[in-house]
Length: 465
Ligand SMILES: [Zn+2]
Image 1: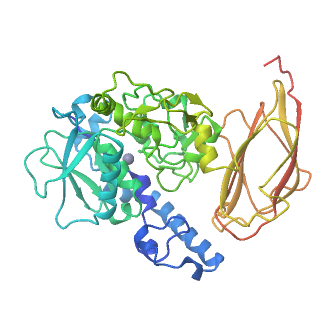
Image 2: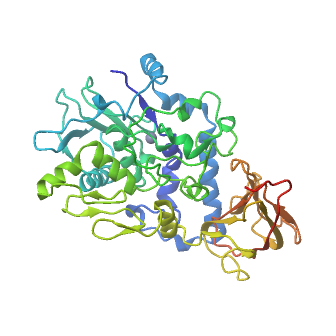
Image 3: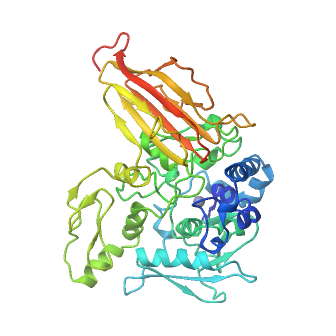
């Protein structure tokens, strides 16, 4: 059996500074056991400086060849397997169901052990959402099982069940145990999940920018042979990496083809266990059939990607309603965006586009996308009347606040602005009918924000698109 240890470098980076996190958690990103810390003792400038330190350390780790030397951990056979790997599609790597329909996975904590709280929380999440059942066997039993341990190589796991190992490692360094999504992600690998951006159909949903990937790490974006169970690509999956993963130059290595999807590639931590993650796990391990049988229901009544759950009811995706999820109110991604980034919007009329609340200053951490769409054969012309965000950082990035504009048909091309880098009266025009404004603020320090007028002007030599 060929084996592949998946390297979760994103997670390593997200938890790169456990000592710092222990003392100074970021607003809204505080693990439960760190809640004793009172973030209000910090001034905004101090908080921002600490946030920046975390990000810069993350970058140093990204550029540290030792990190990858320590992370890759492949045998020669495993390196060859990278060329031809088959993971989710290879059911030999799935954990088998028992006669009662449940899928039993044994595990143990290595000695000396790791912090158990979030691992157990992740296990409970998998159990609550699927028919996989985990049992702590305390010590090795000569049969396949998971071993939660910290070998200091970061956060990583094999993909799928390793039938020839007396316990397969799920490595979780201390920095991997600052939030529950990381162990959920690593257990996902052990159950046969590939990264979302390695799905066989990912080219329909994300651009991969290999020119920005660190030399030698292009394999991180290889497409796997996956069984996607006809479930649409999910930018919000716990298995999706963020947009600058494996970057050699801090530029994006992945850009969502659906503009609003970029919101879910921009997290510095992993997404939550998503609806589609749960659905695909329930299909893969035949939990839906088990639930139907236990509930005495002959056929799955659930529509629009809903699935029949343990409580003998349909579990409905965001954007749907009704007992059978039969009413589709919004597409999945749109519903996710509305819930998590509610100030995002699509603009199809001429008029004005501003930062939220303008002319009131921006004084909150925030993120949203304003997608401006002109009619056929027109392009978007923005004429800025005001633009002032926080200053560019010493490393030249617009870290504290930025407006990223994508005006080309190729969404990979992007320009980020901050400070007063767009002058009053300055005009920015799209190449085609679409322009994307992506605003991010990591600070609560007030800044005036931006305002621009939108006009739709003819595209030269347009022949009726
Ligand atoms: Zn991973």
